[in-house]
Image (cartoon, rainbow, N blue to C red):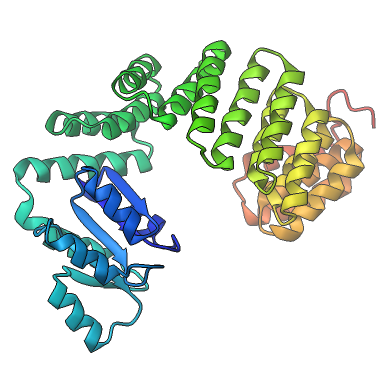
Length: 393
């Protein structure tokens, strides 16, 4: 099943998507105007359900329903409203609205309304398909990827779909069945070569398999496609970042740095993009190079405790203990109940030779998490006066 969501502001799209996907809506279309929605529906996308806000920029939600009702007499159509009065309810009934969804949106009420509206049109296969899809999504959410694989395959046996095939490929990848995942991704591409996300998912698989050349080939194609489609800067930056990650696998550090710089320049307000670049550099031991990307992230958003912590770790590994301690302390301001921060500060002090300070922070961390194994072990070493291996302090 597929649904059309219409919202000029875009505030409800994510919420409604999260509610509908477990019900078996494998394809969700979005539009920011009634005119755009009409164009998509008239193009033959096979829309089964419409959900629109009452207020839109030009043509209103009721006008959209009126325009569609003559051609789509049986399509369930819902309108989202803030506080409906009697006149709005009468108007909705007159034009054939299936129901009003009142904000703040209630997931259970939306689910019930949609299921009731679709019940007359759902046969046994549709019901089974919806069950398999719901089971697959729930299994994926729980990390039960083998169960997700079987459920997606059962759904595909009822209703072949590229969208579900892509979900299956992701589940195969996550269940470490990389060979089957690769073949499924390639099958989707052969059926529809215009799906940008498939190239990105397959490239990610190649990176995880240590196949940087294959990943770079796909990513270069994806970037060219993104430019032709005039995709958002976020998507282009993400592709370029992945190209940098592939170059790190080839031990081409400078090329990777160039890609990371380009990605963060394209999307300069995306702090997590800079964090991902820094984390990739840390993983290969390029600690000094990682610093500038962590600093970029903090310049964008200075409230990220995890970034102060990661940069602190990078400094500690370089024996820059004073700088590391300053960053850990800053992180603690934003996240005072994180036992890992107390452990990191303690370890930093231990390596500095400050055993009493290390003991104090370990005790504080263990108050938060008494079964913190690493902290218990370090506390034992500190109390015995054992110095770190190869510590020069």
